[in-house]
Length: 178
Length: 178
DNA sequence: CAAACCATGTAAGCTGTTACATGATTTC
DNA sequence: GAAATCATGTAACAGCTTACATGGTTTG
Image (cartoon, rainbow over all chains, first blue to last red; front, side, top):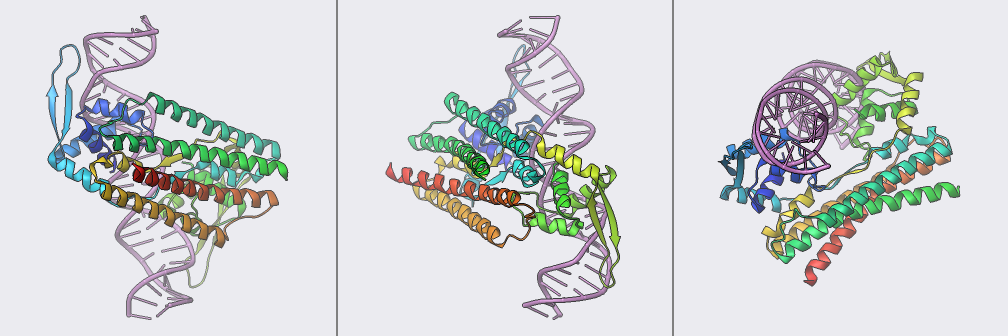
C-alpha cells in the first residue's frame, strides 16, 4: 500500500490530521489516490501500529476533537528507504485508446466527433493542472532544491497532457489528409 | 467494468476463447488489465448473462474442451454505444513523482542515482513497446483506416514514454547546472 | 525430466470508491 | 434555511492480483 508512504512523506513535512491529509490528496494530482476517508484513516491506524507515526488528541470546544499525527524516527527511516528504492515505471491508463481501437465501426463524422471530445477533455485537464500550479499552497519549499523538484513535478504532468494534445492533433490532421 | 467492453471489441473482431483473450490482454499495453483468469472468465459469464455474447463448446480429444465465444447483435450495438460515448481523460499514475517529492532527504549523489534508475526504467519500457510494435500480430487490419488507427494507438504509448524520457533528461541537466 | 502450453475455473486477499453516520458551526 | 466546513469513522461493494486446482501434450 504505497499510499502509506505518501502519507509518511506528508507527515515528514508537517504533522497533520486525517482530515487535513484528505484535503491534500483531494487536490493533488501526483498523489493520485482520491483521498477517501476509508483509505486514509485505515492507513493512519496501520502506520501507528507499525510504529511509524504517533498521534496526539486535541480536544476543541464546539468542534470535534482532532488526532494530530506526527512521524517517528522509525517513520523517517522507513520513508527514506522507500524514497531511494527502485522506482516503478509510469503507468498510462488511457481507456480512450481502447475506444479508438474499435472505432472503425464509426463513419468519418462520428470518428471526428469522438476525437474532438477527447481533445476537449485533455484540454480541460491541462487547464485544471495549470490553475493548480498557479494556486499552489501545498508545497514544503524547504530548500531551493526542493522548490526546484516540486516545480519539475508539476511540469511533468503538464507535459504529459501537452504531449497527449499534440498526439490527437496529429491524428486528426493525418485522418483528414486521407 | 470497462474490461467487458474491451472484450466485446475483441470478440467483434473474431470469436475467441477465454484463454485466447487472456493472451491478448497479456501482451497488449493499451488494454492495460493484466489479463488474469479471474477477471476474464467472470466477465465472459456476465456478458453471456447480459446477452452480448454466446458460446459454443468445442470438444477436443487429448486436450481440454474450448468455449468459443461469439458476439451477438446486441453485443455489437452495446459495443458501438460504448465506442461513441464521451471518452475519459487519460490517467497518469507515476508513483515515482511521489518519491521525488520527498527526495530532498537525499544528497546529490543519491538523488542522481534515483533519477538514473527511473530513466533506465522508462528506457526499458520504451524498448519493450518498440519491440511489441514490430512484432505486432494481434491487429485486425480490416480497412486502411483501421490500420492507420492502430498505428496511431501504438504511437501514442511510445510518445508518452519518449516524453517522459525528455522530462527526466531536462531535470538532470537543470540539477547539475545549479 | 522439467518447464511451458493448452484450457477451464475458484478462493483469498488487497486496493480503492461511494455512500452512510454523527453533529456542531459557518457561509451563502 | 440550505449547503459547505470541520472531524472522525464504518459498511458495502467494485476492481484487480496472486495463487491454487486439474491434467494431458509439447518443447527444450
